[in-house]
Every structure is written in C-alpha cells, then in structure tokens.
Image (tube, rainbow, N blue to C red; front, side, top):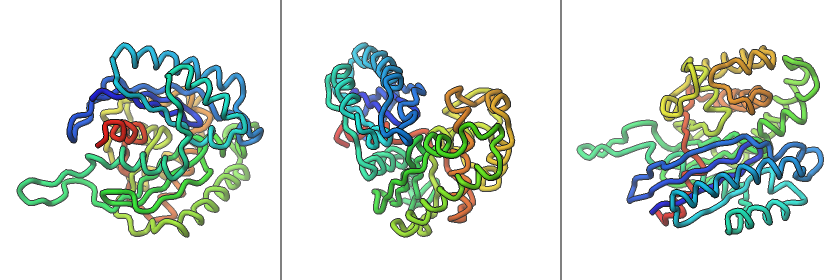
Length: 316
C-alpha cells in the first residue's frame, strides 16, 4: 500500500511517501523543507501571513509528488505551532484546498504516540534462534525535540506514558536568544536552561523516565548533533540513522555550538541553513535531558512521526 504522510511542525514541513507491506516500510520520497511556520507564534499567538505563504508553497510541491507517485491515502498532521495559533482555521482551510483532506491538528499526546511508533518499530528485532533482542533495550524514552514543543514518550512495544511540553528550539530561541548577541551571553543561556529544567520537572512528575534503558532522540536538532559527532562532510541520513552518541559527545558539541558565531555555525557541513539560528537552543534541550536523567548515550533515529503516520494509514 503506497501512502503519503505530511508533518507540519513549528520549524519544518516534511513529506514521506512510502510503500507499506507487512512489517516493512520502504521510502519512495522523504523530504524536508524549513518554513518556520511557528515564527512569532510564541509572542503573537497567530500564524503570520508570510509563514502561511511559505508553508503552502512547499505543500503544493508535495501534493504534486503525491499525485505523481500514486499514493492511495494521504494524512496531514500539524503540531505545536498550529495548536497554539488563534488563526489556525486559516491553516486548516489552506491544507484542505491543497491536499483535499482535512488536516489533523494533533494533540501533544497523539503526536507522542505517532512519534514513538515511528521511532521504535524495527529498532529491535528478535533473533529467530534465541528470541533475544538484538539492539537497544526497552523500555525506551523517545524524545522528539521540535520547534515549538518536545514530546517525551516511555514504552516498550507501545507507548505507556507521555507528555508534551512547550520547549522547542524555535520557541526558546525567540523567547531568550534573539537579539541578545552572538554567541549568546551566559545570562540568556541560563534563561533557556531555566525553562528547560522547569519543563523537565513536569516531565519527571508525569512520566517514569528513569525506568528507561534507552534514550531515543528524534528531529533535526538531534540528527544535526549526530552528524557533527560523526564528522560527516555533508548530511547523510543513512549514516545518522541508529547512530549512537555518548553523553560526553552531546555535552561537547553543545558547548561548541553555543560558543560559535552565526557564520561559524552556518559553515558546519551538516547544518541546514534554516537550523543555524535555532540549533543552540535545540542542543541545550538535549544536553539538559541527558544530564538530568543520567543517560550514557542517545540512539539517534531518522524515523519519527512521519513513519508513525504511514504505519497508521496502512492500518498496521
């Protein structure tokens, strides 16, 4: 069954066209464009006309690909920025016109469930001879660091506990790091850390995170850090997917990114141009999670909510 999944987040809009057969999901197209839909939402509570125009332009190109590849079902999920916006009806109307389907402004809990399925399905396979797990051990704590929010999901085969909190690389950059200097001064970084730690207090109260054996990290901030650790000459999703980065490497890359100027970050080979100004906040979020919950490493996944949507569309 060929399906199309579209994920519209605070920072990027992404497309997965995939063939699903049994327990196999095969990519036909997997694309990402940074559109910054959530630009200014934390301050104004509204999606700006420019942000909507950028997003709809990319979506039209995605719909052309969906038609060309003959996907039989399409699902569009919108996350943090759209949940928060007073004028989300404008976004809904535009998506309906482009794709011919009603977009789902998913709750934080729904986003967490889809991300968990996408990230962990296939992460561990049982050996047919011994039925011993080959790979990272459950329970997993799946952490999806987005532009406006971060989802925390604990589970083994299925999500068991979850919470979405309003810390994301775009939201925290706009709130504390914009216009304060580059590199950001210590006082501004301390304000970011304070917001992250307050959110982690809520996470720890709602999700038994310390039961997790494996931390699985999703989304662009995490994959960019992995690409830096691997010293890749360019972004390579196959090398990054299921790579493991140690806590010490997370701390070191975060320290380096926060000490860089905008130009120095832009020159990092794996850095997407649309991530240059927000990667510092994203790295700080990951760094504080690793420190707070004493994980020794992060398993990095390129599979996430898009894959969860695709599995759900195929009914498997």
